[in-house]
Amino acid sequence: MPMIQLDDDLPRVRVDVTVPAGALSDRRRQGLITEVPADVLSAAGLGESDGLRVWVLVHEEPEGTWGAAGHVVRFSELAALAREQRG
Image (cartoon, rainbow, N blue to C red; front, side):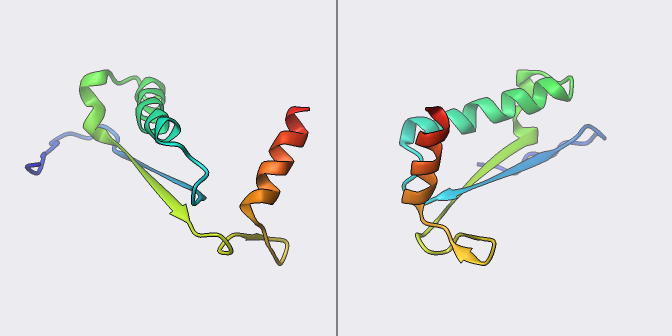
């Protein structure tokens, strides 16, 4: 892809999404990559033609590299918590 030069003062946004490895199906990953830029462009008052202003980077972290409150958090624990909250 050739380098695109945007010669104006309109915003450029990079959205970094970090999830446990295996947490997103291809469909859900594609959903993020489609929906997040549309939402950002809408919030900024820009249109679909400004799509190259918004980049989405999805980072999938291996099991055992997440932590909170001084403890490793496993994907299975996150999934169980989500199921519990959904009732």
